[in-house]
Each structure stands twice: as C-alpha cells, then as structure tokens.
Picture: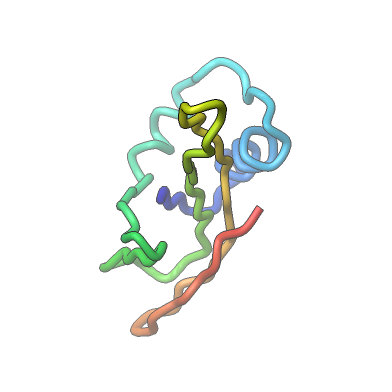
Length: 100
C-alpha cells in the first residue's frame, strides 16, 4: 500500500499512471522531491493496513493486488491496482476501501 499527499504533481501522476495506466513522462526534480513524502506499508491477508502519525491532509492510496490463477497445471499471476483518495483529520482514525 502506498500513500502520497495530494499535490498538483501527485494528482498528475495519479490521474495518468494509476487511473489511465499511461506513463507520466521522464522523472524530474519535482518527482524526486515528491517521493520524499511517499509512505508505504504491507497489508495483512485480509487487506487491512495502517499508517500512523500522518498530518491532517488529503492523500492518494494505491495498492497492487496480485493472485494466482490455475492454468494448465501451472499458476498464472494476475491482478491490478486498487486506489482511493482519503482525507485524514487530526486525532481521528480514517478507514478506507481501495477499489478499481
């Protein structure tokens, strides 16, 4: 699970890369600076995850989900990206469901 604060640059990335599935373009200094604010964690087997100590703000959540599908005696991996936009308020727990 990845968490990015909502900014003009992260909105461009989120719209083009996550929602549309296309390339944002070459990495520039703004992207490197923006990556410094990205956080990530791993969910449990039921998809639960937690980020702590976040400042009040709007965030994009993205998560790559994969699973195996039996195919002629082998297991073929498949999946996709689920996402959500959430608002974190000071002192509150925010629950989110990521979907496609």
